[in-house]
Length: 443
Image (cartoon, rainbow, N blue to C red; front, side, top):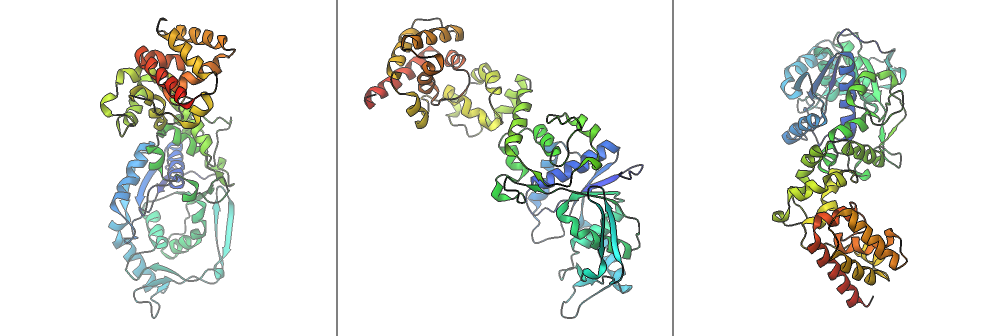
């Protein structure tokens, strides 16, 4: 069982050498969940001692992405670049006591002198007892030639100074644990935090998640129309699950159930299809007005139609139907572009499939009927069904050439509601254009 202090203190400590990736976001989330579940403190610490690779926009980006994900921190952000005096004092102390040294030929590089006798042990909530003999570890650098501390020294000093009680991080940092513990002990701290090394995230090929697997930065998912609540829900399932096996779980229920003891040590598969499914569920559960508001950035920023042709009232009439069919907000413009383009952009594969005989006759009969019928979805449905029956076609086959002629493709929102919103004149113009094209093609 996890030994939980009266007031647990955890930290998320990213290095601002790039965007916040899904692995780091999962680590931040699990720290946040643990803190919220136990009533503890969640600290944000920016480990920016790598001055050559640190960029200020990434420092800002990490914070904005965490906020977007809904992960508020209680303390910080602390920046290691502003705590250099603490690391220098620690290094000077170790050198003065003979526990660290400056190697000959390595000007200003300070190495920690690893004791060769005994072993270093710690308990990991997820992986159990870990013990390694000290003799297997070589002396390691704690201060670079630039004067900046390495990860090991800064990590050891900061965790003690900030009173960190639980270290929750990725399993890739497991090998660094005994170095940090040796440093803590050498600096006079024998008490260990509780460790929990989270399982590796892997792609479909079961290799560590990386750029070759597609989007790995949180900004990528945000910019492609994933909801923060959905992504947060999905990330919580990467190595942990509620006891009843649900996938769609409100965040307050995740907080209530989350325990480090329930995190698995087996690698967690990042499944984009499952993420799409969860995101689609969250989108469908939005109030329609909220869906409209959340969709507007995608509809108004670089749309596939002339901006002046966009009509919010038209989109409002279609919103509920579109909401039922998209997995991400980025898919919304493609669902409604036919409403705001002067002419539909015809998908060639859809055209070839739908415009086989007797498509020309179906279009001709539809034109004749649509010119005189009431312009209501149910009436359009009945008229189209009748047109299909004349040609021995079921409704799905009969409406296929009509859908492609009007919308440009074979899938989209419900056809008859779409026709009603687009309007009689525009629909008839597009049906006539499609029939003329078929005549030119000799179909």
